[in-house]
Image 1 (cartoon, one colour):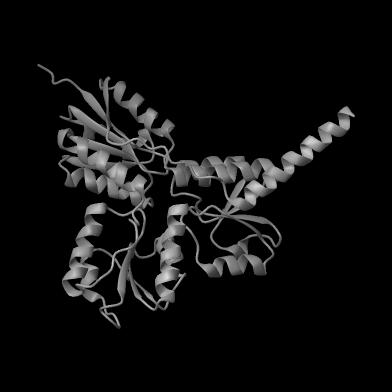
Image 2 (cartoon, rainbow, N blue to C red):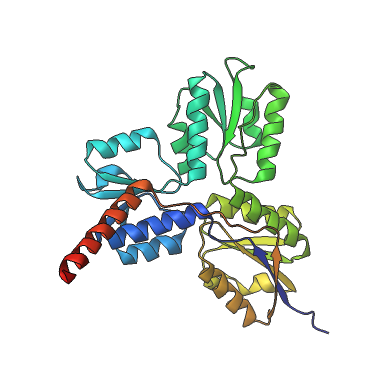
Length: 330
C-alpha cells in the first residue's frame, strides 16, 4: 500500500513587517519619483524580489559612489553605518532609509552602551550587512562573536561593564548557546533591554520546530545569502527532519529529495513573497502531495510605516495633485 503524501505548511512564513516596508519603499519611490531609483545593496536578501524591482526600474549598487550625484538612493532593510549617511550627504544624494525599525533598535542600543563606555559583544555572522552597519555605530566598543566557539576568543577591558547584542536574523537556540558560553567567562554579562532577534525570525523558527519532527524533508523557500532562511533550514534538521533544502524557486526541487518522503514541510524566509511558496505547493501537488495542512504557531499583525522622508514627499505630491484638480474645477 502506497503511503499517503501530505504537506505541512508553516505559518507564519514569508514577508515580515520590515521586509514589506522595505520593498514597498522602493515601489512607492519608483511611482513617486520615476525610474531609475538607486538602491544600495540588495533591498532584502531575495533573488526574486531584487529581479522584480530591477524590472520596474530599480538599479542596485554596492556603494554610494556608483550613484550619480544628486540622485535618489534607498538604503536596504539591513541598515547602514553612520559613515554611509555621511557619504550620501557628500554626494548630495537624496537618501531614503529603509532600515528595518528592529535593526534601528539594535543600532540605538549600540550607541547608548558605547556612550556609557561598555564593551559590546555583537553576536552575528562576519561580513553580514546588518553586522557591518551595527558595528559602524560604535566600532571602538564592538567586537563580533560569530557563534558559540567565538565566545572563547573574547577579551574585555572591564568584566563588570560588558553587554551582548545580536544580529536580528540568527538562530534563537544558537544565540542562547553563545550567550551561555559567554557567561561562563563573563558572569556579569548584561543582556539587551529587549530581545534583539526579531519577532519574525523567532516565529518562523518556532513554526518549523513544531512541524519538523513529523516531516521527512523540509523545503525552505529563500535565497542562499538570506541569513534567516539559512537558519530555518538548520532549525528544521535540528528539530528532527531527515533533511532540509533551501531553494529560490520550485524548479530547483530535485526529484530524488522526494523519494520515500510521505510528509514534506514547506516554509519560507522573511524576505520571500508568498507566490513562490504557492509555486512549490503546485509542484508538490503535481507529484501527489495534495493534502496540505497549515501548522500555525503565531499570528502576526505588526505593520511598520514607510520612511519619514518618503511619506513627506508623498504627502506633498498628493497635496499638489489636489490643488491642481481644484484649480481645474474652479
